[in-house]
Image 1 (cartoon, one colour):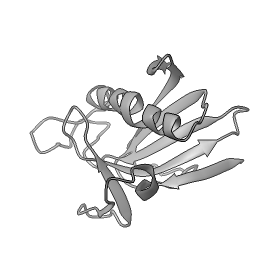
Image 2 (cartoon, one colour):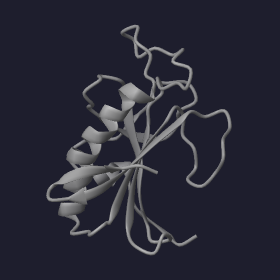
Image 3 (spheres, helix red, strand yellow):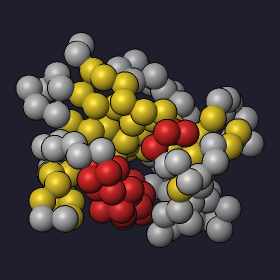
Image 4 (cartoon, one colour):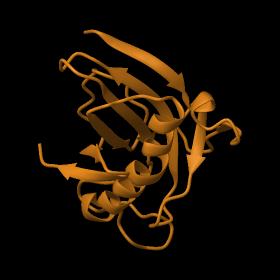
Length: 148
């Protein structure tokens, strides 16, 4: 696979200090980001991937409260299912991802935002992990959702 690891979380947002996550099972440095739902979301890495034949920018986040079954809570008593997380992913594309692409003068044809309830190495299967993905096409200063 021809993928380029472009930046770690600490390099993505130079003005934000990387923190050690307090959640059990999370080790390493992550950059906390603010999302509309208020759930805890931590940037883990940014990957540039040219395998599909054109540049894709992949922004990978850990969101410990997400759940396929809606059984986990974000601390406010509401499950962080895919539907609620989708609005957060769109927000991250429109704000963080597009800003990053502009700053680094990158012409990605696709932006993928992914949430995982635990760190998962890119390209590795983890049947125990809950993972949500959304793909967007950068267009005219915004993100256009692309159905898989």
